[in-house]
Each structure stands twice: as C-alpha cells, then as structure tokens.
Length: 141
Picture: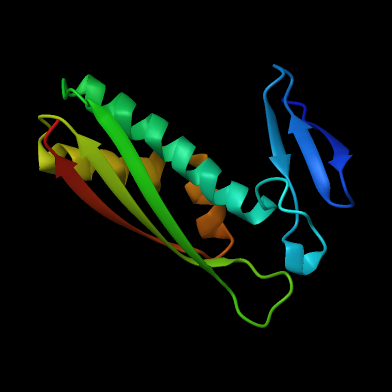
C-alpha cells in the first residue's frame, strides 16, 4: 500500500508531501487564504494527477499502435462549484497536444480509452460529479 508523509515546512500552510520512494511535492494555500505561495494548491494537484494519469495511458496506447509520439503536452482547465463547501471540480477540459506523425483517429481513441476506461483519477473525479471534456490536437514534430 502506498504511503504518503506530509510535513509542515514553510509558514502556516506550506507542506512537503513525499511518497515511499522519496519523491516530494510542495503544497500551500493561496495568499488570500493565509498561504505564502510556497507550492501547488491541493485541488490543483488533483488536476495534475489527472494529467499524469491520462498522459501515461495515452502514450502507452499509442506506442502499442506503433504511433511515434515525439513530444506531448496537455492544458487542463477546471471550474469548481460556486458557493459550496467543499467546492468540488465541476467542469474539466483537457487539451491533448501530441507532436509527431500520429494518426488523429488513433489519438482520439487513445484519449477516449484513457479518460473513460483506464485512468483511475478521471474515474474518481467523475464519480465526484466532474464532467471531463477532451480535445485532441496533432502537431508536426
């Protein structure tokens, strides 16, 4: 079972979280909430996890389809519920930017499989009520 350790390291709300392999991420609250902008907001980290989870899936699927991905970028935008506590992610849009000689239909299928079948983070967010929309862009390498 994965184990995460969290320690306060900067001001009131600046934390370092590390996993059992020693990988560390800094987190903080916003300055408006008393933080000092030391690290990523925990809710933003959920979107980062979504991006990482789906990126791994998409690249693995495309490699199996013999598509050569020269570079890969994502833009993830999220909107949270307004006037609620806790304010969950409501609308998430992901732009997948793939670079190389990649078949667009295969890329769209890989994204669909990731978001709707394989990515545990997207499944978790959707079960919490988020709607995830995707766009796929193929760019020459």
